[in-house]
Image 1 (cartoon, rainbow, N blue to C red):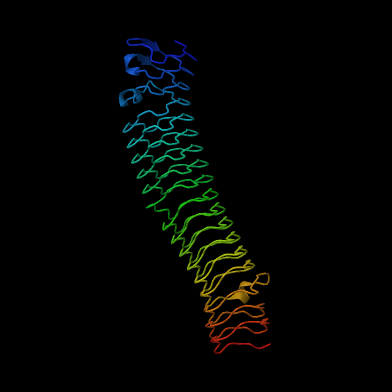
Image 2 (image 1 turned 180 degrees about the vertical axis):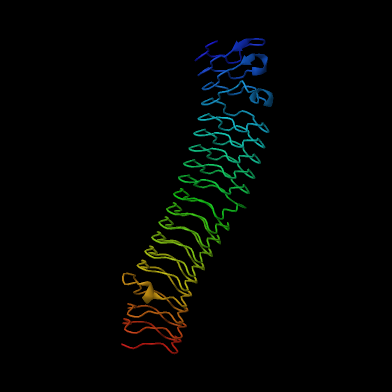
Length: 374
């Protein structure tokens, strides 16, 4: 029952030593080859193992029953079978776990910053509160893993399997997600500022209340996505597909939505103050109580948009540039379009009954069959 708590055994010569049920809490074992010692029922929790030789034979030993809070920064654990083991609150920063078998492993609170975990299998792994900042996880299998409240800032997740992951509260600022299919993922409450999600498939994903400030969502497929309450201030969503997405109460102020497809999207209560919507498709979108003050809508397709039934009494449309927009069959009954530029619009059958049209620019507009009655 050797108690080596707090001892410093750096580079010590322990070949042939027999340590039964030894306690190494806080012990420094740096630079040792643990195979030189006979270890039975040992507790390495809290030990410092930096530079120690750890191989599959040792780590697969069932008598090594506790490794929680162990310091193993920079160790080479590549290819090892560590399935179902517990490494809670360990320091594995800058370690090599490439192609390791880490299924069902418990890495709660573990520091994996800068670690190489490429091509590793982490199916069902528990990474709650883990730090994976700048870690390399390319082509890793994280199916059904739990990453709740984890830090993935700057992590490389390119081509990784991220299906059925629990992401609640995860921070992914600056993460690389190229080639990843994130459809139907639950990223509820996740922090994703400045993250590049360019061109990814996020269909049916849950991004409710997600923080996506200044995120790059260029050409991203966000069809049917749940974005209620999400923060997308300054996000680049050029050419993004958001048809039938729910953006209720979302903050899109200053966002770039040029050429985006928002057909049939729910934008009730959404803040689009200063948003770039030139060339965007907003046909049949619901904009109840949306704030469009200062938004740029030149060339936007608003055909079929029902602004009356959508209920937009508090929406700011005054002074907008709607030149060359398509407003065919749009219902703008009692809308206030004071000072709006409607030059060159195609507005066949538009309902402008009782609308306020003071100082409206309407040159070269096509208003065939329009209702302009007072």
